[in-house]
Image (cartoon, rainbow, N blue to C red):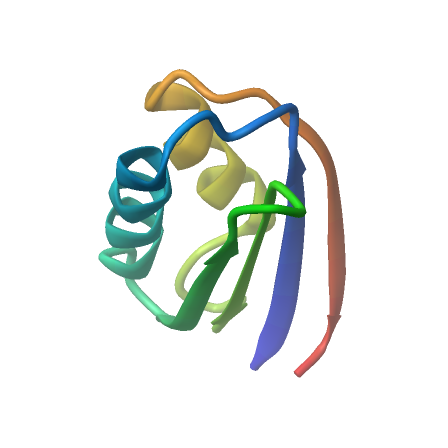
Length: 75
């Protein structure tokens, strides 16, 4: 497992946070998804054999949010 941290441009409301968290957590191989509203960050553990960081960023961007940067670490 690896951990991805995506920095977003801004989050404007708590319902946005829930929408993003739900969409990311539904991806194959993803667990422990958390959206940090005040920091405009998404953290999630993922299995790189099932989903790539680029695919996870694309899920967020498809919802209409700009991913400013992405970091991947060992979980």
